[in-house]
Image 1: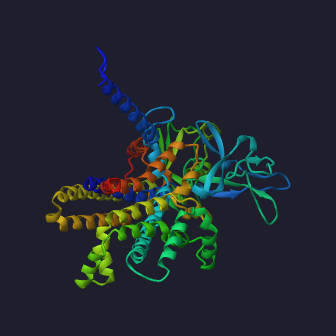
Image 2: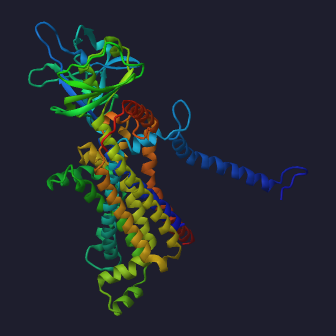
Length: 320
Length: 267
């Protein structure tokens, strides 16, 4: 009974330690990269933000803000501004007069500045992917500008009135469904929402939701380079489990094999430490991650199938 | 013997009824845990899923971080209480000093008092020591709880003085007598102290709320209540996580617990 207890709970301990190591990294990787702006007011216009702050999906448009969570939700998180709290006016989104009391404990409609008493709105201007309500956000004050290549995939074919401002970039290759664009001063980290605003597209495709996808080639390369470290992680986990099985088998003759059991235990601890070191080297850009579950393999299969098919059609080889 | 013609024998009826009651009691005891376990795998709309395990164990590191913190509290408190109760118990059981009986009576009275009675004095003490809102504000008061000392005193009293004298004659000093002679004989008492001290620290609620301010310093017993109830299945996964260490202790020391109950019954 004692031996079986030790076997089972040692496995549970190894799994819990592995989960802890993974969860720290997954939380870091799944944190949304975003640029947050304060809503401004002017003599002409009350509190407003540019219309580019709206995010579009199958359900229509959404405006997202941030709030500071408490307790389990500690950290800067995403909230959706209810449609009743704003209206679209030309090229701006005008925020209506706010209620003085927050709707709920954590999700205040705005934050009251203690110095002047004015309620301020922090709105997500752009993000690396479509925000999800309640997820953690990392506010990038100053994004860097570097050269990058973008891959735009059109599900229903390239629109006829498509154009790229030569000031920002040039088209490298194109076919019926995809375009490769070189941008000299591309914003890092890549935020598809921001880049879509910069590209000149017709209003119809913007307002009816996702019928085109934008990827950064440098982020795809970074993602694929991380795969080797994920492979190493997999080997480390399997090695831990194999060593655990071997230790359990050796423990049947504890007196004879006690040294080997201790050695196995030390090796398992070493492997767990190696896991921590290897996992730090993984850097998966959040623009290529699913919104809800990092283990959503169906999402990766769909996205990378589209990317590979498009790049094959454009005859482009990535630098891996 | 109560045989009925063509019917079920009376004794068999009694055992069927007894078994039925036993099964109902088992269902009542285990039912809630089974419900929690099953619900962690079921989606709201129906269907099997691991989504809630992902949300609790992978999507955020907070639950596991809080789990390890709670475990650290438990290990430190158990270690401290075992050491304190061993030495204090041996002193009360085998040493002779002035005022021993009065001190032991005081210990028994303190043991009966609920934790809430000593919360304010402990708070003032921790404040004076400048330990409030730290790990030690939880660990130190819990290490010196009187129950462990009482149990070890009773266990050591059961050891005959001749054994102690024989150990001294063989050249054992005080520490050797305690660790090599007294403790192995009083193993069941020690296991009882470990179990009770761990369960006490694992389930504590009042002390963290009073002595700690930061939510992230709370053990899981307190923090669990704050999980969003919009997804109760995530809370159920954390409940399963909370059950792991006590279950381990009970299954590992299962034999000693049963032996202790049997010996107590025989006495």
